Image (cartoon, rainbow, N blue to C red; front, side, top):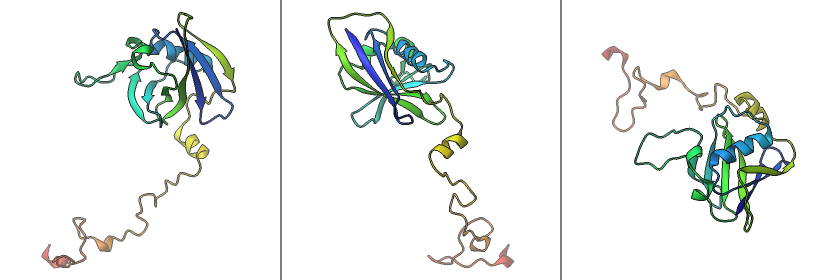
Amino acid sequence: MIYRFTLISDEVDDFVREIQIDPEATFYDFHEAIVKSVGYTNDQMTSFFICDDDWEKEKEITLEEMDDNPEMDSWVMKDTTISELIEDEKQKLLYVFDYMTERCFFIELSEIITGKEMKGAKCTKKEGNAPKQTIDFEEMAANSGSLDLDENFYGDQDFDLEDFDQEGFDIGGGEGGTPFEEEKF
């Protein structure tokens, strides 16, 4: 049996990769096939997420052991075979390749090929250029429109020190409160 996955990106319209892989291969093998197919370095934290039909994250498969709580299920790429968590065509996954900005590839198990076998993984379709592996926050803000982070970001442009007493509480006098009288301090 062979799993054929299709990868797309919401950043690059003509980007498509198809990767065929042995279902008994690990998520780490899948990770390496993705990194190789897009020309990324293998020095970034990455994760797979098993998703529901609406792309909502359900289970995370991490590159390194992240959870030391034995009561929580945790999956590590090198220890988890693909067939352990994926068995149905049209199953959706996310592959987060840039943790700082949560950039990812959208992946779908597009076909289960029965009657054939393979070892490891290989890229069988390569169209378009992959998005850059990492971008900084300024570049992300420039790409996604204006991200207004000036002094008015938190809505404090109308802040007036006179509205607060010395301990930072409202002194409006409502709800049985008394107006601030400086002489008492």
